[in-house]
Figure 1 (cartoon, rainbow, N blue to C red):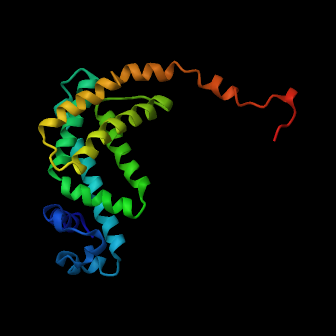
Figure 2 (figure 1 turned 90 degrees about the vertical axis):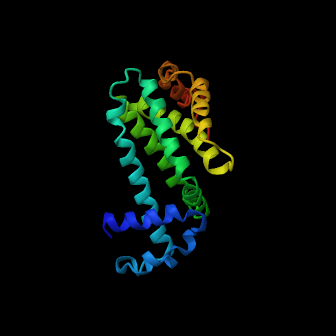
Figure 3 (figure 1 turned 180 degrees about the horizontal axis):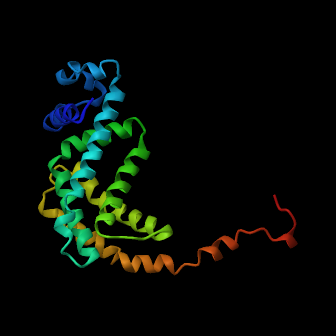
Length: 208
């Protein structure tokens, strides 16, 4: 199935999200008419559409690179990207709610975590982050937590408004202070010394 066909089905699902059920997605007329997915079951078609949506989100986020290029502060870049993405999510909250309900029902929790990590990773990439090793993962995990906290509010709270997004972002960033400070705290830990505590002491015998 080509991108145009996927886009048509995805747009239909987003526009009709309140009546969308992934467990019966093959009942949608657009899908019934598509011969390329005729022999796929509901879960396979659902995975196809959800994966395509996640890819489109990354592509949409990529377009913000030109907008943040003139911003010097890395934290300010991250904040702007968070605001953009969460506003994007809010416009599609009913669809996203159905997506994550489906993934939870199918126990595809790794796909949920992977989504949050990829969003956070793309934001750091766009902000110019060149970290490696522990710093690379710690920054993305922290940002995943910041992003997912407000994202969950968006898809679970009926009265959540656009005006609350900036305040929630600021509150979350304030709690972790600045990413550079978090980075310093993590890097100051002597990881090797922690591992050394678990090395066997030959003088004590074999233990277990």
